[in-house]
Image (cartoon, rainbow, N blue to C red):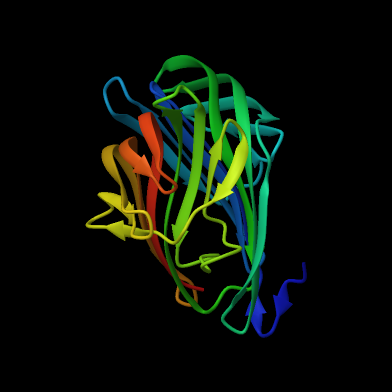
Length: 256
């Protein structure tokens, strides 16, 4: 994709999130108007300890659909990623131009070292590859997570309001044993306390373990986000009752 289209600069990122009962982690490579940066976070659910970082140096983070590596002072991540379901790909109008995303369910295996402790990972997650010429002012709320339903089926979800959120042909998806199902629109409740789907009267409740948060003012680019990670209970859109669920909530406002 070109660096400039419709007078808007290209933004693109690849985010990997792996969520489980013991460890919650994420990392991403981000480019805004050609300027790269990367971030990572690891939450140990045993004590809620959060190890996180952001860098503008190249090479510290590699995020793709096949592999996630982080090489930082306090965090080391080395995970092989294998496809674990059907991907969902969406292109949507946004402002005067368009945006694109692809969500891939994955299975992650490998090791994570944070706060001096090494963990063996064998768990489910999501790869979010996104790019486009977003409007100058963009705001969204988003949730992704993994778990099992009351029948023991593997569940993965990606739910959003603010981007790719048309009533149909949206990125809102619940995967059941790797098979995607689009959901009706959702709304995020309270201070990222959960989300609800009015179409089928389902409610999902969120309990945070730890939170990433960052605000930046780089004159032409401003960004403010919160990204708590923790556990979920309740029912996903489509009537999927969770027996257990782990993942992330996010609220992001950007002027870019």
